[in-house]
Length: 255
Ligand code: NAD
Ligand code: IMJ
Image 1 (tube, rainbow, N blue to C red):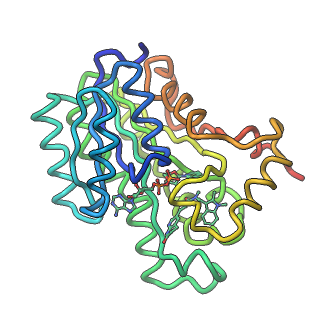
Image 2 (cartoon, rainbow, N blue to C red):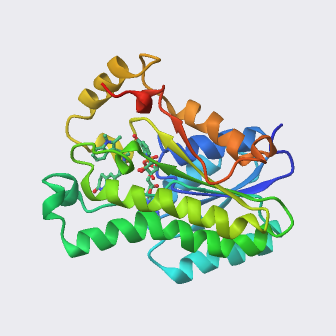
């Protein structure tokens, strides 16, 4: 029981395939009390049904575009949990049209939306979480993608947002380190979820990764969740500012 007695909040559960859900479930299995947040009424029923399958859940609304909703989540967590040991940020969004043509044609609005939702939200959440983590060796974890380090066709403005998210992890690790709060990311290989299933040619992307990765296969949600469990737990007490690739080794390849 690696998270026995700990309490955490998980942002980004849309459905049973969400990476955030796999992490929430795994953390709960290891003894953590979990709060799940959902983006809007459209996703509330999904979140409540999933939450009903874990022990003692708390379910809260949070659209990260709304500062008052972020503040309300942490007010509820303070009241219900009395403190916080970990945060999982599994949120990304770009306008659909920005993931289709060339990055060259990114609109001002498309750039702003991708950055705000996919990157700024981590800093906003971390700022609210830190006071609840005082004296508890907190751990903050986000999910990123190789498209923020190298060019992946069509990832476009999301790649630029992930580059900013990755750098945010490092600056937050520096800022929060003096309060014994760690900040890390998992860079997951492609997994079929709501955020990837809509992408044209996703099965081709999975095939390519399966052929090229050192382990000659794709990753799944459970492998991402197991790595997350490590980073959230005290086993990773010496690890901060790190981007851990959980991608069957794909990122080491040059050809
Ligand atoms: P997902 O669609 O299940 O999760 C994305 C989540 O973002 C959803 O729950 C959605 O509600 C939430 N979200 C979007 N806009 C929001 C807003 N304004 N406020 C609050 N929540 C909002 O898909 P996923 O693949 O599990 O994605 C989770 C994270 O993992 C993302 O950061 C994604 O970039 C990252 N990731 C995914 C893959 C993959 O192949 N699936 C690979 C690497 C990294
Ligand atoms: C997304 C676009 C292009 C290529 C992609 C992806 N590859 C992978 C993804 C190769 C693995 C999935 N991913 C890592 C994401 O972060 C996806 C984010 C995303 C997806 C959508 C689809 C629906 C929509 N907006 C989105 N915004 C962000 O309208």
